[in-house]
Every structure is written in structure tokens, then in C-alpha cells.
Length: 148
Image 1 (spheres, rainbow, N blue to C red):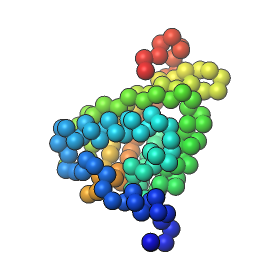
Image 2: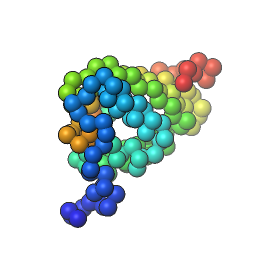
Image 3: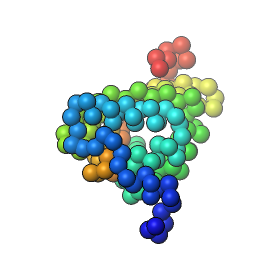
């Protein structure tokens, strides 16, 4: 086993279907799989969709690798309570996708937010996301205005 990789990481480095190059059907499958995983709010599970050295920009955070992804997601879901996400494919080509999303959450004080954003994704040949660049804006909402 290569140094620094756990058995879980080694087993995750096989193939993560569907694989690029994407067509409409497989691109939609990939987006739905991402939505489903993120809605578990499980940093370990979510991180396994990314390459070990995945590169992210999330708002103003620059994140590199699965360990940093897990730490980031743990902090995120400690702050963003009752998080619920919806993703939509915006476009795709070969091993890249553009996705729009919105999600709702509340803070410890009970203030609800709807967060809107766009992501650019790039996948490796095994179907793991190697780059994720996200731009996100938050809008305070009343609990009665929730859609998700």
C-alpha cells in the first residue's frame, strides 16, 4: 500500500461511475449522486467522491486533498444546521461540468438562509472529481419561505 493511504482510500481509487467523457444521461447521474451524497451531511462519505489531491475553492477557502475536504465539511455542517441541497446540471463537456445549486440551512440562533451558487467540476479518468470551484451567496429567509 502506498505511504499515507488507508485501505479505505485505496479501495476508493478504483472507478467511480459514471466515467467521463459524459453524455446527458451520465452527467445527470453524476449530479444526482453528488446531491444525494451532500445531503447525507457525512464528510467521510462526501470526501470519497474526490481525488486524494483534489483542489477546491469554496467561497474564499482554498482546500487541497481529502483530509482538508473532510475538515472543511465537518466545520460547514456544524454551522449550517438542517442543511438541504438541490443541484442542477447547467452544462457539460468531456470531463467537465457546470452545476447550479441552492441549499437551505439555519444557524444556531434559528435564522434560516438560502444559499445560491455555481460550481465548476473537473473529473479524472476514474470518475473522481479532481477540481471543484464554487461561488456561493447567502440570503436570509424566514422559515415560512423555505422551499426545500
